[in-house]
Length: 215
Image 1 (cartoon, rainbow, N blue to C red):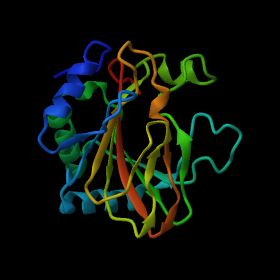
Image 2: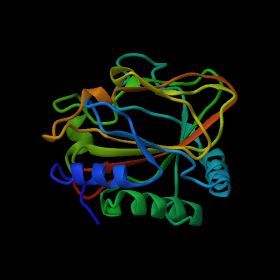
Image 3: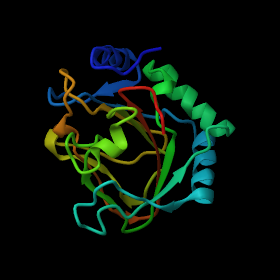
Image 4: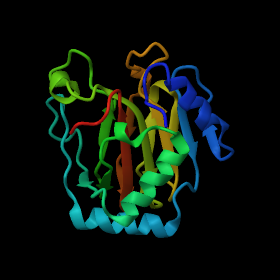
């Protein structure tokens, strides 16, 4: 297992790139990958049911004074549940990252009209809440996100600074390194969970930290 340290980031990216089902976005600005059909339909359905049962309004560390910056719902997924253990195992086997560095798995639900405006997953060093969220476990390193269902219209994830937009497809994994090769945070990972125009979007997200997770 690998700790997602600065020195290990390239080896994690190399491991992902070597996977036969993984596609890497051809840009030098950020390490961004997709893997279609990563999650089987039966597991996706179980995770959707868990999200529906436990969802609550999403929160954000800094909404930039915009009450509508993030309008989705979130579910903290119980690590002891079989479906959660199953997806955690899939992510560990794919990435090689030691699960001790991972935050608890989260699910998100976006109804029609809901979105998460352009943001980064890392906490900005020196920012208002940096110390609060990063004092123990450090900043976020890698993000792994899976679309659990097809969406009738909208709901894409747009990385404006690398000119890449991913459409939601059931079972598709997106993952990216939130840092630059030298270890600094990477602004090119700015991304927008675009508005769902028709239907509902479900995703699960796994974030990894610089140090072992102490939530």
